[in-house]
Length: 64
Image (cartoon, rainbow, N blue to C red; front, side, top):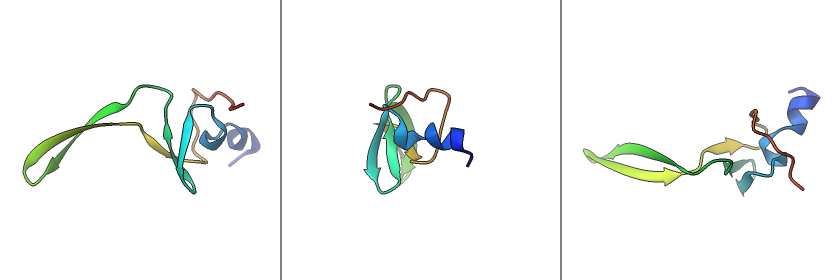
């Protein structure tokens, strides 16, 4: 990872909510609805995308 990407990583973003050592939720946008099948029944859940701390995207805003 280059220096520019490292400084714009999720772990340094104002919208990232750390959950574990190197995983967290991106809270830039509202939670997304996810459909999945459990025991032949479709279930729905709303959730924020989970990202690694060293991931990055174009919506980065530096945390205070």
